[in-house]
Every structure is written in structure tokens, then in C-alpha cells.
Image 1 (tube, rainbow, N blue to C red):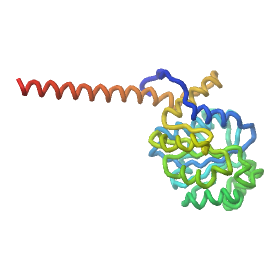
Image 2: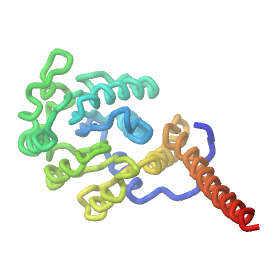
Image 3: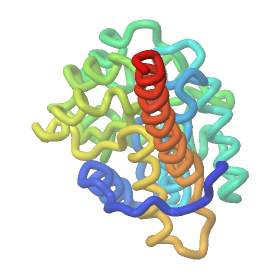
Image 4: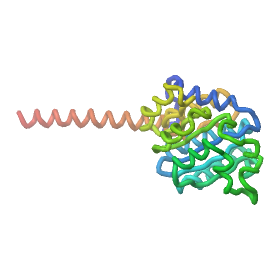
Length: 256
């Protein structure tokens, strides 16, 4: 972060709803996460995923995650370990979270999840046991049993997940900035119960986390990148203005 200052403004309703839903989770519950982001969108998606993990770990909520991108499971796993260390949460595989791995077909896996969660993940193992028998998933027989389903994505996998699952489980989404307009439609129609969109969404989550836990380290990529983005945009506007001024003066010299 090059510009460590606050950007004035209110948190947006989609982010407030997202935060409220996650904060309503109870200790020991498990949420199901579809984590499809990779390093190509880490500027936004990683900040979103980190903020989500911080909240879940502080509330001692378990989670299981799967992906439809072959790079995504390891990227998510690395982030889980990093946030666990930062939070001193000691989150352990099988006991506190489960990595369910890569599924090559979004339609297929989400239809399977919608039909029978245990069958969808029955071949996955963690720490020498079947993932569905771990403390994270043993009490969850169908997707309706999960209090929340959260998708972190920069792709069309959002549409597929909503098509297959939104009538069965409450869904939240974390998307990149360019996806906000299309995702806002799903939020407005109540198919999504909350949404974190782009850097603004991360910034809003970290702002609300600061109010909830003022004694903890809450600033992350949202507070680091969002003010810097404003400075860059201001410089871009200034450059455009100077370019137009220069063009105007050049024309005047040619006409003189």
C-alpha cells in the first residue's frame, strides 16, 4: 500500500448484508465455499478470501471448499494457512476445514452438490479419512443443511452455481469489480443474500471488521489497495486533462 489513508464513504448494502450473514454464523457450524479464483485476480479475489477467512476463524466456523479451476485449490490452501498463522487460529485440515479439490465441470459438480452432498464428495480424502466423515462434514447430508454457501470467483462459475443451488441454500458471492453489474442483478432479485464486489467490497468488509474487532489487525488488501486505486485514478484524470491542454496549445501555435 502506497497511500495508507481512509477513503470517506459509506459501506454499501450488498457488503453490509454479506457481513451480517457471515457474522450470524455460530461456532462449530460449517459453510461450503466454491473458491474459483487464482493468482490472476489476486488483487481483488485474494483480499476478499482473506477477509472471509479472518471472520470465519474469529468466529470458529468450519469450512469446506472446492474449485472448478485446477490452480484454485492450492492457491486457496496457501491462503488458508497464511491467514491461520496471522490470526493465530491454528486451523487444521480435517478438524477445522476440508479441501475438497478440483472438479473439471461446474455444471456437473454443482448439480451433484444440489442432489447429494455426500455422494458428490465421497471420493475425497483428508488426513487419511474420507472428507465426508471428518468433523467438518460428518453432520451435513445435503446442501440445505449448510447455513451458507459462498462463492469466490472471477468467472462464469457464479451463474452456474446460482442456477443449480440458489433455491436450496442461502448464497453469498465475492466477485471482481468488472462482475459487479451482472452480480448486482442476482442480489437485487434476492438470489444472493449478500455480495462483496471488487476492491470496494473488500474495503467495506475490512471497515466493518474494524468496528467489530477494533483491537485486532483488520487492514488488508482492501485498505491497502483501495486508497491507492483512487490516487492512480486521479493521476489518470490529471494526465488526460494535461494531454488535452497540450493538444489545445499545440493547435494554437500551429494557427498562429
